[in-house]
Length: 505
Image (tube, rainbow, N blue to C red; front, top):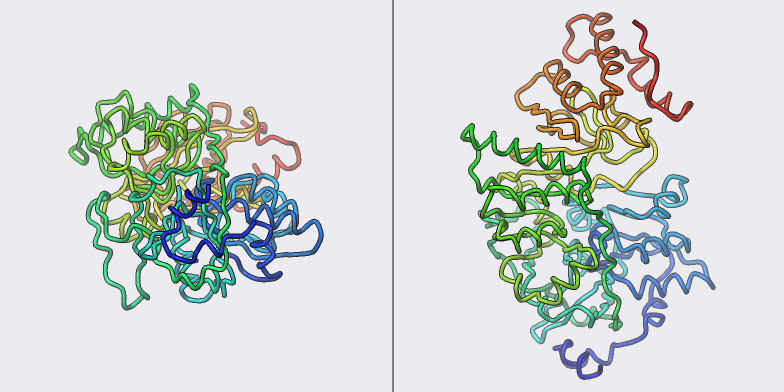
């Protein structure tokens, strides 16, 4: 192992900074801000955070933790349960942490993923005492090579007082070369991002670091936690089929070609299932420009459908991890990983004309989308990158099943209980019931499309009853709402565990 470690530490003298995870965790000071690598269960710091959990058994230590996105469950889950986290941002996806956020024991700063690097640059987040970054190697010319995600690691490394490197020797050295690290200058002084195609490389092979800032190097052999996405079911397959038909209609109308435009797909089983649907389609020569590369992307590369894919992380199921990382040479010229402030940047999204596909928790009859809060109060995961993409995409598409909780909850309601994406950023809605193209439509023109095409049959009459009574009461206003009833569905759910109610004829 010593030879393997020495091979991956290209700068002379770095071996002297190798220590145990416990020794590195002891360097972290109570009450400080810590930046950790990791984006959606990929490339996350693992062994030092777990050593912090052990440390917390004997002493009180609380820190503010900022990452790229969610960490693996063994990290976010245990850090939260051990009481280590005071404040967390900008995204999480763990059940234990979610519960502690919703009881107020952890302060959570939900934010657009493209914004966080700027907040560090401005000093709003910080000062960062430690950056804990997982790496596959440190090259002799001073580049830290991330593993399976880039996320916010470049900005953390730049602004942190100290860097703790988790050198993960489980990840293959063939990861070297798939990263494209470009860090913008200060606002007002920076140049436009010189990217006109998703496959352009404009940066360096790794994160340029000052070796003097490296306080510790900890050897890790912990793999990334596998993705938990499930195969498409009958309903998600219907969504995929409807979306593919919609894209074909766009081709027929002369707005798209069979190559479409670069695709972005949010994290999760539904969005992954939609991408999987391209495998048996007539679309070809596709490009993905997203934040996460999931199983479907690599399946489409294997199928000859995707020619290139760029993102900020790779999140795979256990089966795909073995396949992809065991044969990374076959994919290396077809993928790249960028910092999230580039992959999710509005300038890049707008210039490339992305087609953005993300998941909604609920939406209302006018097309506003809630993607974060259950019944308007309880945080689920966070807005993630969906706001970055939806507002700036050529096509902002949201997918969701039309119902939840076995049919007691309608995903389409009179008024969303929390707004993450206003009607102005929502172009197309897809459920297993159908699709609603909302482009160019006024609010009242959207209502029949959303109710008739997308709502579950059990709730259509109830939705029409609300809307018709709103029009009758208020007249021909721009957006009819009965304010005292607009959230009554959520009140009924809280009191009776269902949104269903009798419609008065």
